[in-house]
Amino acid sequence: MRQAGYLPNPGKIVCVGLNYRDHVAEGGRPAPVRPVLFAKFPNAIIPDGAPIVRPAGTHALDLEVELGVVIGSTARRVTRQHALDHVTGYVVVNDVSARDWQGVKAALREGEVGDGQWLRAKSSDTFMPVGPVLAPREAIPDPQRLRLRSWRTPGAGPDAGRPILMQDGSTADMIWGVAELLEFITAAITLDPGDIVVTGTPSGVGVFRDPPVFLEPGDRVRCEIEGIGSVENPVIDWNDDYA
Image 1 (cartoon, rainbow, N blue to C red):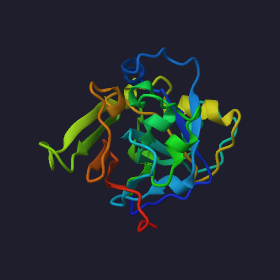
Image 2 (image 1 turned 90 degrees about the vertical axis):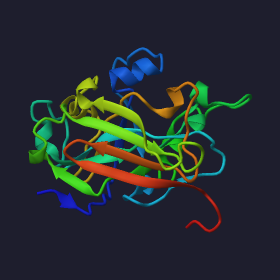
Image 3 (image 1 turned 135 degrees about the vertical axis):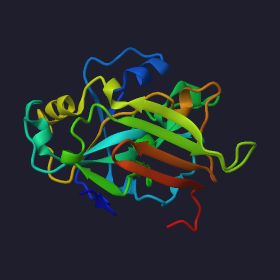
């Protein structure tokens, strides 16, 4: 049975960057030699239907569909052979990113520089929509064979109201699979029940398109993973009325 209406409250959110071969290639970068880890905080989590808020100061909001792995039992120095025993289930995640704050060259206007790290760019309020379904581990026999897709529905312009496919990939393209990531992470960081590992995104993100495509207020974003479900959220600008 899938747990519907799921909204996590993790103590830790450990994210993985540059973990899909096609995403690394679209950015013109070499593949990393080990997993690239960064953190999000629980303040970033919002449920299906809640607004993604573009904060003042960024003009380059982007989407990233990702497989979220929810920990079910304490994992410390686990081996990849037993790593999945510590997983309770899987969720669909949108790793919203402010590409200008992140410092991606294609997102920077003249004279702009990034933050030098990813914290504000990745963990601002509302930057982690999570789908309402927790698919139990037993329902996903192989987390490395799942199709991931994302769509942007513009709120204005000639394509207003028409969903546009952005990403269409497979977890088979991960450089490090779920079990390998858990082995690497828990060698140094203990994962507790309820913690989430967010495992990377496939190609098709807006910043590497020509020209780049960023999320604007009035747009809607939908992320979907085969066998788990989807999360869909509108995009709004921050204002004094938003609480």
